[in-house]
Image (cartoon, rainbow, N blue to C red; front, side):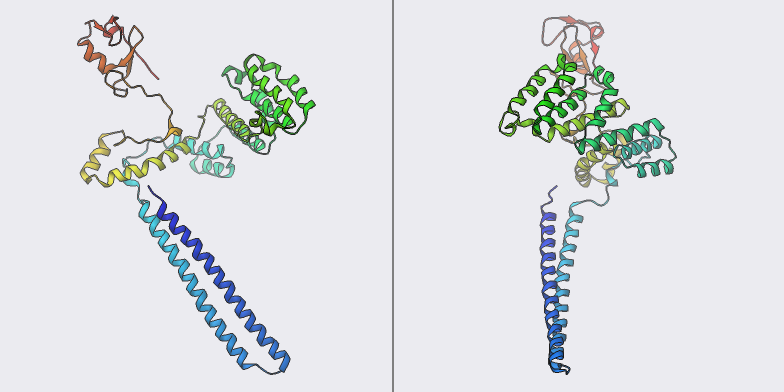
Length: 381
């Protein structure tokens, strides 16, 4: 989908609006000068200056006409932009749906509520809960509020709320191999270095880095090395420690770990669905536009899969896809990957074609080891 025409029309709107503003300013200045002339002549002569009044009336009329014309050009540009939007975007996207009734309304309402709460939209979330008649545990609501407070504090360069939360959940973080607690302490240390506080940085390292020496020694050594360049950090190989990305990474990891402990996915399912839909809908609409009505109904009613393969980009890659080295086909629920006793993996359909029978022994396509269908194991990614 190309948005060049919309961008072009939008630029035209900005240009027309700027010209309209200039025309209005110029016209008002002319009117002001004409009225000032009338006032001055009246004060000087004590009589009504008919010529000046007539000139002012003409200025007002011509100014009104020029302003009206300029506004008309702005309105015309707005209309053309609207037509360009209508031409590119499909107003009715229901044609890409299956037409069936969604099952699981309560689950959907809970996901929507979680989405609002994750965004810190407490008022909207509470109103939605009330109108959809669902309940959220008080502890869960408190957890949402706490993590939102932590993320807001990180935006303000305040790490203390995040450090308190990480210290309280230190054992949980260690059990899942999370680096969050160390990264937060690293940020505090880096802040001292960036501010030129050498003694505070050294003391902070002594107080907090020993706990992470077993797993983060290489990074600790790099951090201590940055102290040597504390007065010229920007021109050294440690300039990375001044990057805003360190704070963003810490905030993202904090949000992800808190979601994990609450039993939530890393990203909001509602955001994922909307983003994926925005990518998929234009392509599905294009497919539907070239299909006949009967073909559309048959396609949408008989299949739970997309009519075409749609690449949603790297941001929406969640599961590994196994491609059979024999058939070159992607594995599926009906054709899962199977592990042979030798360790090689091929898809189920390929094994059946090679084996030609349940009890018959067959040779692995990649090594001399023989096996039967009873010896293979189904793999799950």
